[in-house]
Image 1 (cartoon, one colour):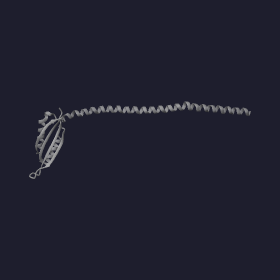
Image 2 (cartoon, helix red, strand yellow):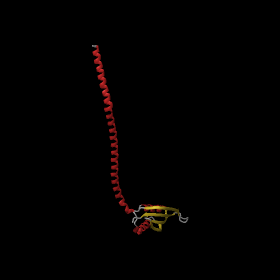
Image 3 (cartoon, helix red, strand yellow):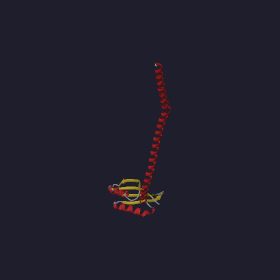
Image 4 (tube, one colour):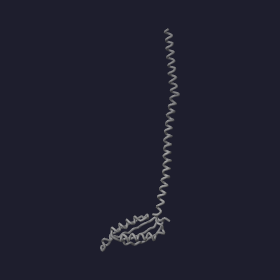
Length: 176
């Protein structure tokens, strides 16, 4: 009986050992590669998700840019009224003279010429300091894009200490 019991014990140990080995082999050769493949697929899926999100954001950015371009075009269309037209020379000079008259300033336009898409003006002004500042403020508020290229303010002579002289070099963009 003892021999039989040992044989049954050996058979049981061999059977359990065989099943344990089979489980280890199955785990090592089937389950482990499957789990590894699942992790790889998960990582690839995550990368694809991030790539698609970036593409989506890029496309939405382009869509928003197109909308903004349309809005900017609408705004820019209104700017043409602020550009100087060559046929507006008389109106410009009249507006400058009216500005000088309103601000009690002596004005002399030294030169006017158009070149390279700009109208260039040189103006001498004389008057008290506050009136000159008001003239410059009114000049800034005109409905034109006016650039002050040079501004030279000097005090008057000893006979008229309250009088200042101002030399302006102006340029305006010409819209043909």
